[in-house]
Image 1 (cartoon, rainbow, N blue to C red):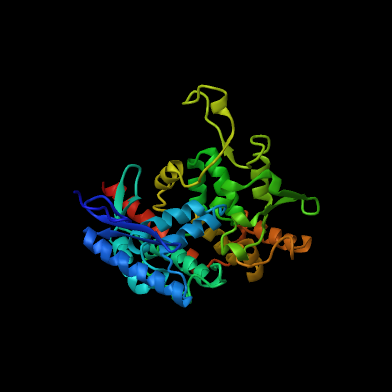
Image 2 (image 1 turned 45 degrees about the horizontal axis):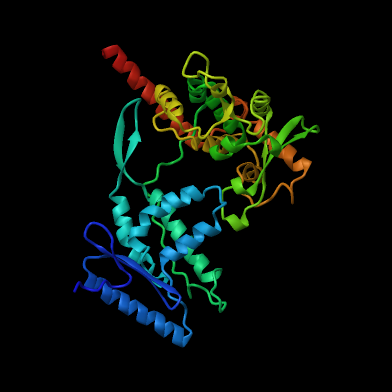
Length: 407
């Protein structure tokens, strides 16, 4: 007579075993057991905890995997949910099987060590890559989601008795950003070199970002039905829905994007191409397009594509990030003497909503501030950061000139 199969214990690949069982309405689940005896011992102990909880009225035993599933279901409509899934995936083998009260700094350390040992390829040339370890900022993206889930479990999610899933959320310590790459603003001379090297559709978006200061994902997502034309200023504003605004989902509001005269010309040049999206692209004749459908104007997924990377390499700008365009706007506004409050409104560092607080007068103030950075006329008060970059650029130019002469 064959050996009786233990209910809830299953093979999990690579010779291991998985516990997955429902007991008194609760799920008892964990993977990573080397044999069935070990799995059975753990399962019996967890089932006893569930039984005691039911008798005493204590909190239901819940695992981080259950909480992560709840989070992804509740925020399925969040624009960045795919990014959250991507950032959650590497931590699940380390804490997915743990009870919520077992997730804290100590149990997260193995995950942090593993991620810091992971190497990524960084493009440094047209076909040249270099391996670098993941930065603390990348690891923090995952830790922030873990912290968010634990906070929801301790404050918002409740069982049928009205009790929270977790008594108290532990403090999840973020890693220090000592290894992060500092912002790299774009000099005006570099801008004049870079933009002609970009394809027209990428150059248009880059120029728009350099005159508005919004993040690249907002530029890519910009829609015509967000536009409001102001006759008083002879320019457009775009009321960007809060789903496209970075920050805590519950605290976000619709925000205003104001076009200066340069950005307005960029927008006007896009009219008539696509009925929904402002920035779009179509294949050129004589290349890979074969049908009229392939020639249609279609939305663009990202600015940071191979064309951007090739152009920055050919311009000698190293690893210039698309997000550096936003830092460039902030630096130029400061150099032009724009008020700190106006800069905050332009860069969306304030919590004010266009529909709640903004007036035409405030929009005019933002417009006037952005007009000061449409050309080099606003660099009368150069920042120390600009002077440092200009000095470095001159030294690089001298070195390259000497090499060419002695080469």
